[in-house]
Length: 133
Image 1 (cartoon, rainbow, N blue to C red):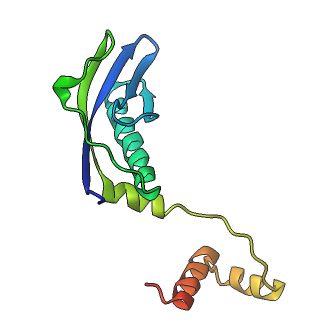
Image 2 (tube, rainbow, N blue to C red; image 1 turned 90 degrees about the vertical axis):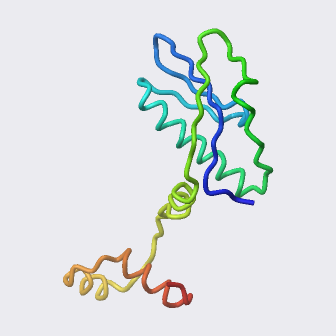
């Protein structure tokens, strides 16, 4: 079942060349940054996108490991990162896709003269045709 919020422990490693972040419960979910603030933003984004992908693939979402059971390598700092999934899911579903289409030259000229937004008109037309709001 999809949840609105997920909270997982993350390990932040501070090195001279930046901060790397890993999630012990989410193999392959990694990010890096130059500042702590940026590291938290990127950690939320990486975790949200990773979990969104797992949801879409029908994978089981693991339970987070209790904070006190984690033992990072030297220099690693364990912190909790949370993410609000409805925002992530919305961003993923609203990714734009480029389409190439052909229309008569006279129609193109008339539409350009009227300052028509082709993308908007196509979206409105598709929604109407498909009965979507």
